[in-house]
Length: 104
Length: 149
Image 1 (cartoon, one colour):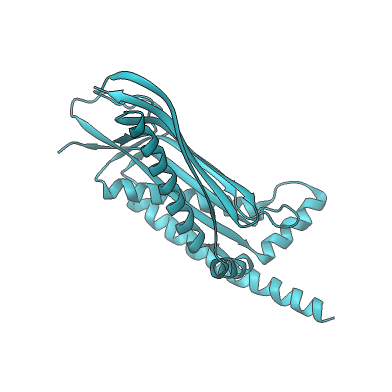
Image 2: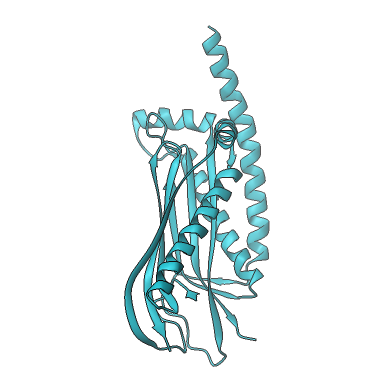
């Protein structure tokens, strides 16, 4: 499965368009990480725990998107976009969406 | 009285550690930017036509950074009079450059020398009581092209 944020893939032809596919996940951090983040908020600097958490969740969102794409019979997802939003204190939603297509 | 002492201690701690952390971060960013200088990273949507077959792959880099107590205090003061919040400008600059570098590192690991259609996204992840920025997440993603083996 090709996942890309380009609208075309050089050298390949789109034979069928299958519509929008999406995947999302909502994650919260655990207390230990929140505690460390509180400290970091004092001194400044990177919050490694959060970076990892968001990366994991983004992978999860992409995987869900891929599942949906293979369910409709696509072999590629083009024009992928990511978006992040914080819903409440301590929880973030990661969202990935793209266009499922069949490439020749 | 105790509150004042705690407040001043926090300010001083934030000022010193924040400064050290920022200097160290900038140093490492500049060093790595030189290292990845040869990777073409542009936001154009269409890749150039090439004779060699290329393989493409989605690459992404993200970072979560936070401001220190001192800068947050400064920005609070700035909010009274309005104007440029320099304290936060450097935070966002650092975060963007770091995210780009991480994306480039992923591209380098894939043996790619070009990254196209780069999108940058910023999100404030911790909403504290007064809705200040606090910590931000920056995500950079794009499509890396590498010559097919």
